[in-house]
Length: 359
Image 1: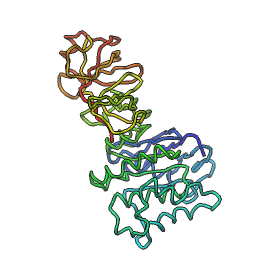
Image 2 (image 1 turned 90 degrees about the horizontal axis):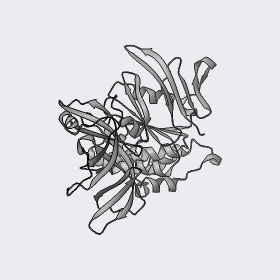
Image 3 (image 1 turned 45 degrees about the vertical axis):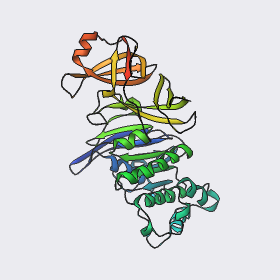
């Protein structure tokens, strides 16, 4: 089952109005992001069929799951999807192995593409198979819940803030496994979150919700770089770049390559060619009319100025730049804009003081 994920809904529910028209990619991870009460979880529950509201249209590829005008409503257990909630909801009396196999038993034997061993290896569960849920950490329980959902052979994987109940350490434990699912399995995911760090690290496509409305959606960095939207990173806007390791230098540095140029960071252990993500905060980008000369800043790229937006910080401005099609944001003072006489269309040098690798 391939193709886009569609959800259309315009309905009043008590004091809340949900009005969305979503066309989500049929691959990668789409993050639904917004404050509490923005409609994220309601959208996910509508996709899952766990909530039925009038007038909803919902489909995945060529499979229509709800269309009231045509009298179609496919109940949750008949939808080819897996759902992972904040609470892993494992069966307390069953071992990890039996919890995993519970998901597989929903699928006829001839339609089972993934085997128990493959999923346990992917999620690092091999040594936990004989344990009961009570003997697992919160992160381990969530990994079992993910494995159970994957063994149900979903065409779509829904995740409703799966890390929200975990502390920082457990989140760091489980994030690499989510990345592995992203990289190794061709299953589209819809991931509900209000945590910017999770969105930056995992999402390919981003939907911003507020008050039941979609206020922005698109490729991750495209949305992050829109200065007409509330910043995802609160008062610290920035962008996320997809990079790959291009060189391991002898002086303890690693060169990262992206379509707009190169960035140097402290040495990484991964092999050349490894894809990574990095976050560049607008506060860590300064602008110059001339190339760097005798500076301790290693990273500078030639950029074109797109536009300016007033910043929430008094006296400062957000400058949107393009580096061969890659968008960067710089936060500088209004005085610097005037002193350097920077205008839209000008060529400048973006000096990047800090690059934060997301891992």
